[in-house]
Amino acid sequence: MLLKTRGALTAAAIAQELGMTKEGARLQLLKYTDEGLILAENESSGVGRPKQFFSLTALGNAKFPDTHAELTVKLIDMIKNTLGDNALKAVMDASEQAGRDRYKKELDTIDELEERIVKLTEIRSREGYMAEFSKDENGYLFIENHCPICAAATSCQGFCSGELNVFRFILGEDVSINREDHIVSGDRRCSYRINFKNKLVI
Image 1 (cartoon, rainbow, N blue to C red):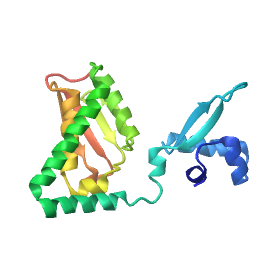
Image 2: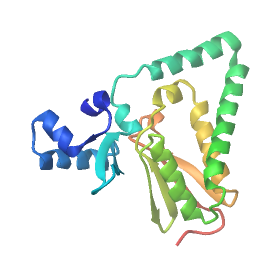
Image 3: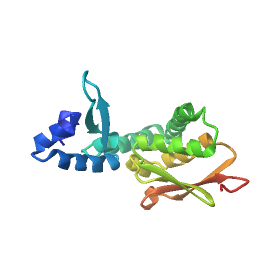
């Protein structure tokens, strides 16, 4: 709440505001940083060592009340009920194409599959999906521990199918991607099995 209302602050300033030790504040800040809720950045102010400031990430901001999910669902229903299924499909197609263009721009110079997965993980985490991946004898398992558009995806499955199409597009034709877990279906997370179509990743 302090970072939300005051903006970026140092650990010392936070400790003073909350009436706790600086070390105690740092331990809490480290915990929230590891959870992706807070971002730590160094800022130089002339002579001396740079000061470290802490601010909320997009995921941290998402912890506060927001009516965007309800609004998005209402807009989806309005498009469908007012303009029809074809109009909603056109919107979903446009959203998918925008995703392809946006991700392609960031991954265009990366050829190796694992490096592309690393970059995809970075992008999706930045967007609030809390993404990670692991590698085993069968290939890769790409995981999203959170869905920031869950309400919209539940209302319109076009978001989920479009997302999978985008992943398949940016990782290439030689790669197969299949969803194994799905938050919208009641699973704890969304997960995707990724491997080359003609060989296993070792």
